[in-house]
Amino acid sequence: MSIENKFLEDERKRLYALLNGLPGLVYVRTSEGKVVFANHNFKEIHGEPDNRKCYHILLNKDEPCSNCHTPATSGIKIPKQWQCVIKDTIFEVFQHPFQDSDGTQLFLMQLLDITKRKLAEEEMARLDRLNLVGELAASIAHEVRNPLTTVRGFLQILKSRDTLQENTDYYDLMISELDRANGIISEFLSIAKTKTELYTVVKLNNLVHSLYPLILADATNQDKKVVLETEQVTDLTMNEREIRQLILNLTRNGFEAMPSRGVLKIMTYMEANNIVLAVQDQGTGISKDIIERLGTPFLTTKERGTGLGLATCYNIAERHNAKIDVESSSSGTTFFIRFQIR
Image 1 (cartoon, rainbow, N blue to C red):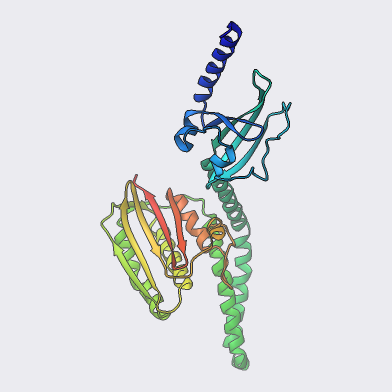
Image 2: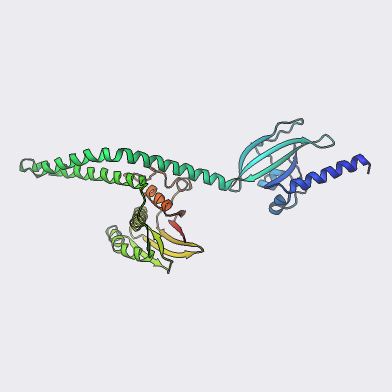
């Protein structure tokens, strides 16, 4: 081996040693997609490249990707950056073109897993939407509620007059609709809460069992059933009134999702460092695109729904440093509220 070739080989080894230390999946490919080098992270997941094509290794495809950003022509000098999804993982892709010592056009590729970052960004966007609704609710709710109260009072006076008894049904309907509007305003205000609430140490199972008669009454009225499965769990620091509201919102949503004779199950149990409250229904399930947007104000699939019930639940969970996870299929949906043990 000549001195020049030995120098180039040593440089290549130093370069590959450097690439092995880079984070993420790093590989070098030709214009045709052949992988001629891969770092340790790449090999741990996909094995030795063995000169296979990148689209075959990463996506198990026999043809190049239709949206491939790597040109087949040589002499490309401009780096590129984009995002792609590979098997439910979101990657930030960095492409740096360079030429090998023999003039071959190569591309240094680095794929960084940004799935958690993207999920965090989506969560921040969701919280921003909640905060926006909260600010809106706080600013207008009282201004709207005051005239509603006045109108309701005069309707009750008119309803009580003997000369207007033939219109009683109309008055009852108007009062009922005003009460419904007032309930929506109350849901707005529950999202808008920013004041410090009273937190006490509460036995979650005791709270669930205390709500059982009320939940059972709802179930009976709708020809449905409710089952409690409570295991021993650690005491939880909470705002009892808010967690009561969260449980009732989730159970009522569950009942509305089920046909007659459906069974709603409420469970509590320990899971690692979490206290888990789970509400499981036997409805028809929730589509994946809806699950991803749950908790967004005004998102509803109900004809007369406001989309504020679940938004309130997510807000309550956030104030309790808890996380809501959802699993759904055609046979039902389960909401998991995971409270961290403090």
